Image (cartoon, rainbow, N blue to C red; front, side, top):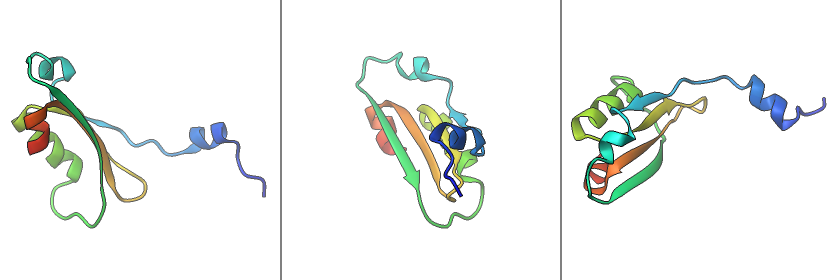
Length: 90
């Protein structure tokens, strides 16, 4: 069996929708405070509400933006952006 070229593999990979956090980076950038961006991936068994929904709700409360999605590996990955102290609290 011949492996698929990289481009063909990317086309056939299942797509997972992203959930956007907050109201956009412009809202977070409206402050003069230093901004921070963090990429993350959560491993392990998660119970209760879906992690993307919980993360989206918390991001709105705290006032950060970004995205979050479930992966095919059973993890949750995303990015959080905003004022440094708010990203740290997230």
